[in-house]
Length: 134
Image (cartoon, rainbow, N blue to C red):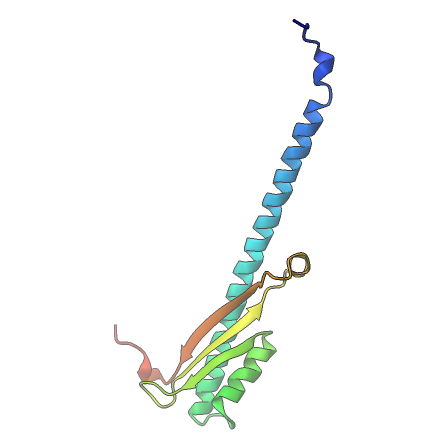
């Protein structure tokens, strides 16, 4: 049996440290990705709210133009794309819009181009009498 010498393990701490650093980098990237996704979802919801409110005002005659065209313009000003717009429902001036917004994570999308980092938001706006009774 060969005697055990401490020199045989020289450098093993470096390998462990490099492994731990690699795991930490991956976890940090995951946290950044999740944070960007949450921010994109919030921004998409905000864009949907603003687009629905502007479209409902237009449907009520407070602004000129087509409600869905106005919703599209407001969504574009908030870096979002109008996906769906419907006017009417329980009330003729009720508007429902769905928008999508790309995430601001550019580095990840260049590395993984097949991975779509987009968030969607849907919002409904209408006259005050359309509010549910509590």
